[in-house]
Length: 116
Length: 116
Image (cartoon, rainbow over all chains, first blue to last red; front, side, top):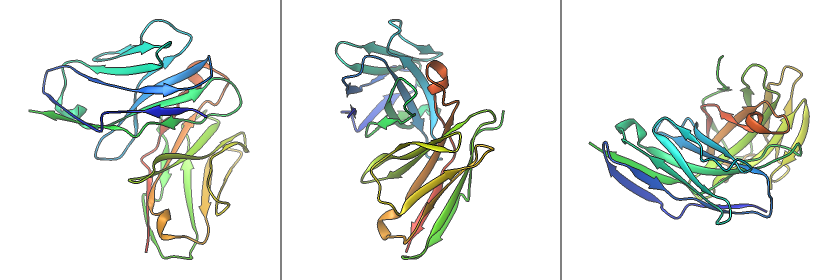
């Protein structure tokens, strides 16, 4: 079974600064997918960024980027130029590759507060 | 494209009753997954349907069931409600194919269920 660990329950960052959220996972799979989702107070879960394990290049989406270290089973999210709208719960999630079915395994989340 | 929609958005039920939640996926998506979110247990996978077949199932009692229709819309049913079933129920859709971008799940706004 896969497990996802987010060791930072809460974080705070000043607007316009950079913050990094940590995520580690445990799996015996070689091919898999990793995701970061954000859940603002409205509760809608929104995809932030995704990474395919067989791709060595780290994924980036505008101000969001990841540091994917496959050997260390680490998948951290960096948010640059933080904005007030980035205030949310952030969840790291894992999915196996293949056609056996889609199932996301989530971490416990990191609550990020962006201070004005 | 319209996003994932869930109805109803809020529900209040009493113990012992049953409830049916509905999810309409993004057009063209054939996989629908259901998750339960509670403060104590976090995000937990319930089940996944692809082309009207249950392809994956989480560790929930048989009171939790689901189905998918030919138009990919899905319903989940909880019978004999218990207080502990109070939660946010999230539905997610994806293309459901074997790999790559098709594995990405997009979430609906959720149905908040309160059991009294």
